Length: 197
Length: 201
Image 1 (cartoon, one colour):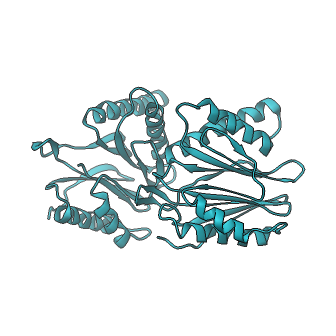
Image 2 (spheres, one colour):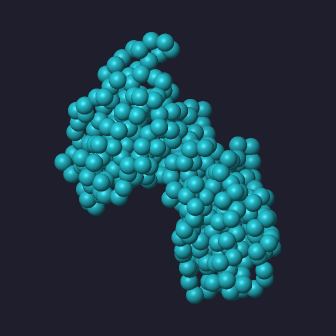
Image 3 (cartoon, chains in turn yellow, cyan):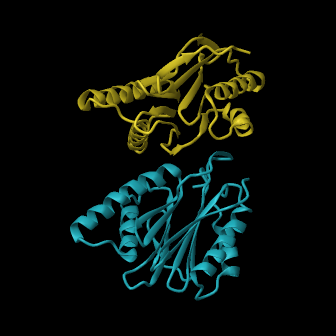
């Protein structure tokens, strides 16, 4: 019942997740960060089966970091996304498939472009201008389809994100009062304090 | 097989072949992407379209790319469409119990410029077909449109019109496919790639 969605402009990507952790009828935590920083310019948001999120994400995070250490150079967002998909695909038909949905967003310093990759738990990968996982996708995609156009600015992107948050809070049955919003662009990754509805 | 949705068709013409596909990637009834590649070049004159589960489309494409590159290194020549079809068939049958959920369509010209098309089921049974080959969630629809529209010895431009109309009208009746279309005509002198303007629903 977790929300994650992301939207890109030419040179920035905004990544959003809700911050609640619930188990059965109890809200366990209200301020969990579901974003995993992989390089200074690439991050991934992960939702899915409880016991799979941390092992998978830590494994990816560790290996991406290891590449940076070994090669004195970071993986680009496209390379990270393909690595994530490869690991999910290998695990899919083995004894221990990960049931996690991922959005990899990042800024490529060599091309000056931001990108977003949608990866589902079956390891289907596609590059998209905006994307979402989970039940709230039905609401969020409608907002994106209405509001998105090519080459939006960061302010316009944040406006669309706010509309998505408002729509989810109004119409989605599960209570989601808090969201983590992060931006990655030429200056790196930073969290944005977005006003809640 | 119906989880992501797809529609792929290949047709023979006069010294040319065409392969056309939709561009939808869906998650059951929800559309995720309208620019998803399902047809991939294998050599300059052979293309493979992979209909079915998107993750297996990518995995199979990556594996086939590696096998074809290895073939090229060993044999010092590019692979012929007929040989490639057997390669795909063998690879699929290796996973006889635990198969890839894809139904490939192969279209190409052999070294004598003769057209070659075929499709396979999920475990690699080759259907050499005759005039046209269809695959995907809109396969039944495509059988109908192709059977009505196809005729022998179509020139490249005529083949383009025929295959485009066959694809577009078939996917318009299938909820799981459509949302864009791309057609490739393979001729001895080169490839013509065209994006079709289609209904985005």
